[in-house]
Length: 153
Image (cartoon, rainbow, N blue to C red; front, side):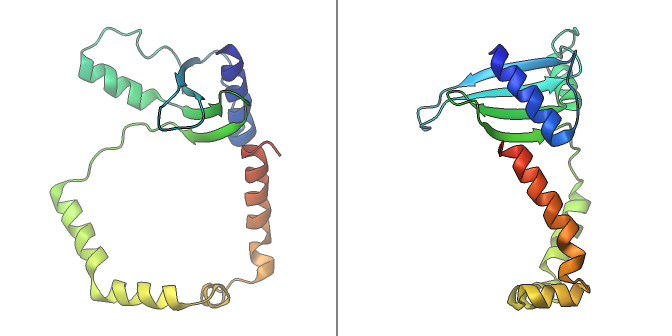
């Protein structure tokens, strides 16, 4: 468990450039019957989220608001499997906001644009956006670097 937490800390450092020294890390061992692998899963908080005396709802909200990172490590090999920033609390949109978004998504104009975009080739996408291969090289390099950090190689 301690080794998984250390691997997770290095994983967070490599991907996000953040140190979790002095923070609270919850580690769980996952051995699901539906999976052929076992995992160590970690959740990072600035401090112990269960240390405050609150109601159950307040406790869950406190945890959600303070979750910084999540990671998964292969329990046998120690290889990195997944990492993400903490979920945090995301307020739900109102009924009116959901309706407006639904109407926007379903508009004929948007549907026609989406169909036209899907029929374009990558070269046509780049031309439409005014991008050259040289313009996207820094993004490709950044993507390669993040992939290297994520997958250890």
